[in-house]
Image (cartoon, rainbow over all chains, first blue to last red; front, side, top):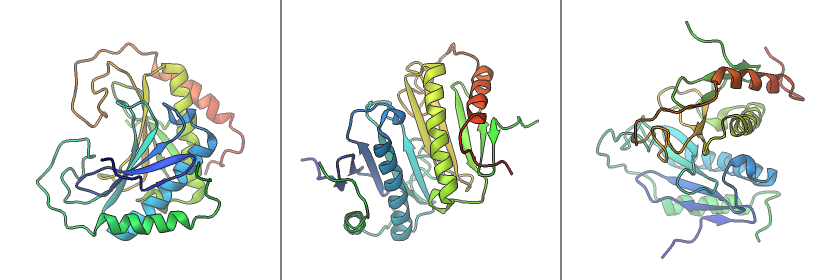
Length: 132
Length: 132
């Protein structure tokens, strides 16, 4: 069974990517292959959410670095990855798509508590787009 | 000898990453490790330039996909990658940081002509930040 989205509104949907590290994905709702094909509202919303999630991840997980990427080479629908990276995670300092560097056994604060906090922040946002 | 930047102003510097594919990097000028540590003006400028470069790459190179990423795991200074990807480039559909898929010999329009066009567009932008 597919897990419920972390958050969604008329423009975007946030999902968890199950992984060793904290990793969220933001999908554009309207069909768009390239980011420049998304509406200005969708682009602005994604940038605002990347910023908000980055700050929340830094605060909660205290990672060594945040990584952000948008490829959609396999699935031609705009989605952005945002990840908390740690000096001793499996791939650091390579991107998670790069060569594995080590076995790792990270001891991180629980993801469900992070999602709960994030949902609280998102629901309290000013001028958030209406949900469809 | 290091090549001259493609473009620079008070907030950012655009450089070419020498590669099989068209690949530019946008560096924040002010010291910042994470994107959320950059000034709002720098963040807005980088997003505007990513959008402009994406449109220019799509128009000029006619790629199969644009890829965008910000890691800075090795070099803790914010920089964004933007790449034109082709179905038959070395790594597609993997990110360029992933496993090599094939030998490739792309026949692309010249990069120097692209840079010339891009510089023209950038110099004609409205309300661009002053150069230091």
